[in-house]
Length: 232
Image (cartoon, rainbow, N blue to C red; front, side, top):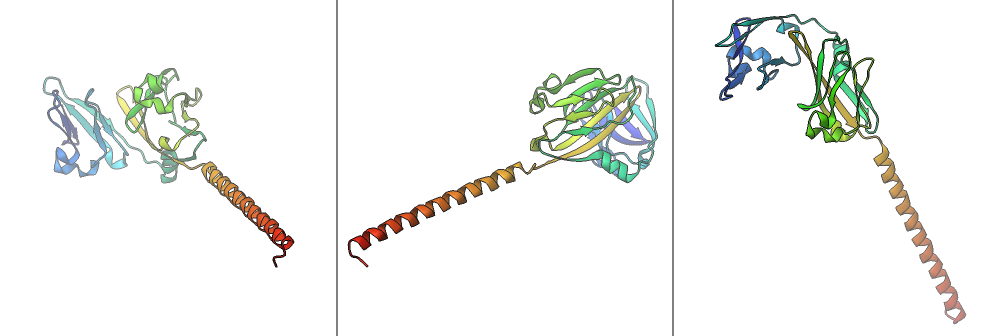
């Protein structure tokens, strides 16, 4: 199977998986897609990440035994501020963060991935297919901490941890099209740890102060005893 963009080969895969290439590995004329193409080894689907308006055009899938398939892709501009707000999320540890997919349709099938590991799957009518370990045994880190908003379709990560930081990818299969949205989540310290450290320091200082008072008290008693013995 080979993928072409405006007549230029951009990806290729053999059924026995002996040969796979994307971007400049297939053709030197594909620098525009450098590190933005992903080929599914099981389905042969081509994913274009972090799309730009320059990616608009004709995509052709060519197979030796089947007829060619053509896809017309039109990329519309999105304001930079809105795009950055959608893609970058910063949350304090212990709080919840919401990843909003935007407009969805009833026939959509949506899959969420965390660092390429599936963590949730549901349909456009918000019927959950799987979440957490139901989707993949590797998602135990999210056990009972993922929630689907049944009004907006947003994915909510509750009681966030530092290990939840990373890239979250949403793939929406809509008829013959696939929409990809990428979110970058950064979980920062909640300040609790700093408070605990401060408390420990205060406790240590109090103990040190108490020990110091004890030493002074002993010295004072010793001095009175010496005076009673006639020692000046």
